[in-house]
Image (cartoon, rainbow, N blue to C red):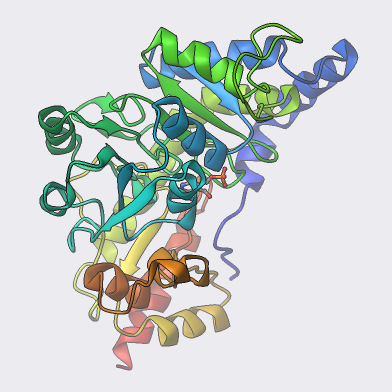
Length: 367
Ligand SMILES: Cc1ncc(COP(=O)(O)O)c(C=O)c1O
């Protein structure tokens, strides 16, 4: 049996007709940038996520960068970010000219650790960037309290958290300005690149609308330096349709995760993701000392897996100039050696999940 790591087929078959209709309508209307689809999507996504405003942009990285920039983060400032995240979280900070201050993650949740955040704050700290990695929410009660006490901004990286909640409030609605990605394989993915900023501030929303469009107020008036980063009409049309299915697809992810959690409990040395967080399981990530062997074993059985992420940002060539070294963030470094993402997408059949579980069990029986 073949079980790909990720497949968009199930979701895309379900919405094929609606997407084709919507794309044809955009094509006929002939407006491809900043039109009715983007406007409608922004309203719908803001309503879904519980924020007053949503501003569509070209990617998650742009959304993160613009969020920080909107809040005035720049050279001389410091931004606290987890050491265990996708490099995009870091790159956004670098692009503002601010200093990256990484903190190690919690060994249980694999997420930003409030104790480390507190210790990293100094007079230059301007913002905290919690990353809701793998679809699980960071402890937003603690992090918002820390931010408030120290007069810091929060910019949530919600690229992997569409639909996730912390105490019934959606991730991406806690920070001053938050960012998400619609990269195709995300829980809410476009048919290409896309992203969005969410905020409750009218002033920041207006600024974002201008910054994403060359810093213009009207067509040829540019009071500030902006960039070109717009969610296009075709992407907005597709992602609008997918938004209607997001909760249903997240439920399917949760059901699959539940099977993994029950069936893989106590198998070999596997550490399972913590259950107590209302995760939307963008990824289902286990930990094992035998990661590479298990990965090749599963590959031979037709099961696709991935590693998110094998090299932490602080040990990447891109950050060589910051002079980090091995041992600086031990929990994150250990995770990079042990994490393995099992197949996870809505539409994964129960026989496929069972096949994955049985093969994992078989691998550990020989250990
Ligand atoms: C945690 C995280 N942050 C930021 C990004 C960047 O999003 P994008 O690929 O849309 O630029 C991604 C996605 O790749 C991500 O997983």
